[in-house]
Length: 515
Ligand code: BG6
Image (tube, rainbow, N blue to C red; front, side):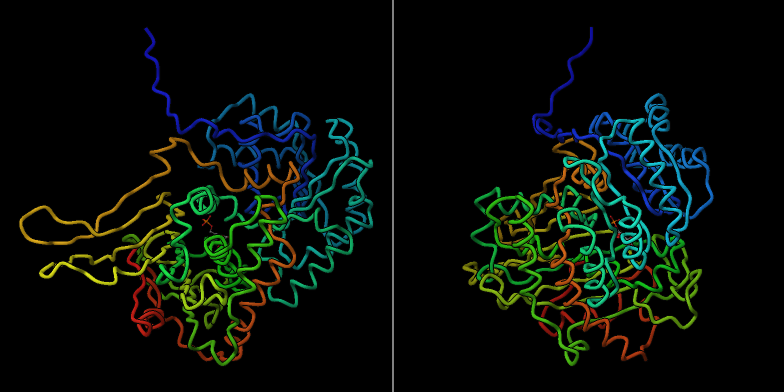
């Protein structure tokens, strides 16, 4: 007799709503790494979960001279290899392959767009996608402007019918400084409306990142203490154990601030510090989120040396394996001064957060991959226990929002150790996503592509949002550029970054959390 499986009540309601409007998804930069590693697995998962619309097709567009069958092979390999695939279904893959096409052409060549349009029109009819199009631009940002202009000139941006839509997803980093981001926004907005532009930051598609909002705004217990009266300081860590993974050319141009701080880390900071939005619709939510970044006190050129730290890894070992230093990675200059680590001390000039330091750090080749936001609450103002021995080496009164990899929330607080004497030790209350909900997270790209299909911009960046973030980091990048003499490498791979980063907190009487 079949044994009834216990039902996990927490799983109820986990179902996402699917997209209903037919759509054609055209990926620019389809032969690249992102398409294979993230986009194609996400698309397969959406189809497999029944979340993509019935009438749906995918077209890759890139310079590589690939055939349609080659591109279908890329999809097949991506599904075979990706750890993000939940259910492998050969029939479904075959069905999806039939709806996948590829057009090769130079992004700068007007004739290539004429060919692309002809193919998209033909496929639109074949798959009844009603003229609805999403262009996913996964190319370097320097190409976005030209691609948009060419799409316009070839008539691809104008919706086919009054009720069909054309949307564009653009990857991060959006520009490389404030001036280029402004120029890019102006270029895109010449041909598109803001409500057609989806600036993606995959951190916002992570379940644990969205849960910051639920924790704060769907509970009554945290909000009263979520402010300068009770919070001592906030630490945000985005640490990676990986190095460059073959992306030397990209990283040399980018560095950690453009790659992670300007976007992922500042998104986390905004969610943790924003005021409650009136609703979770795109305008209200983004208004509040952007207000936080705008309220961060600018770091002036003369403060850069004091408020920020930059680092670059040298050779070392990570998880017991010897690894080369940054300057020895492929496609990296032997005297490169690109930072692979950065730490910032930031303050938010508003009533809620005045005087509360936010310490942000991110680095490659750290001892482990961990993204965490730690809210350090103030200590009890007075301890009434005279002869208490206090054993809290890892700190106490801290709420740790563990974004990855051990997704969950941990509250560390003091407890009495059983026994006749008054010994106090920090203990943990631990909520783990995996154990509670028993569901495998969808990849952030799945959620965000689906949102774009549904026309929901809430979890995408707005023009003023990306500009505010660039305005904050720009003086730092400029100043680092001016002061080019820097003693790199200044941390060994497999360590927590340069000694100066410890100093950044030590001068305030604090320490980075041991993660
Ligand atoms: C990307 C960066 O945006 O984010 C990468 O370009 C980085 O350098 C990655 O490794 C980190 O993402 P995640 O989801 O693995 O934390």
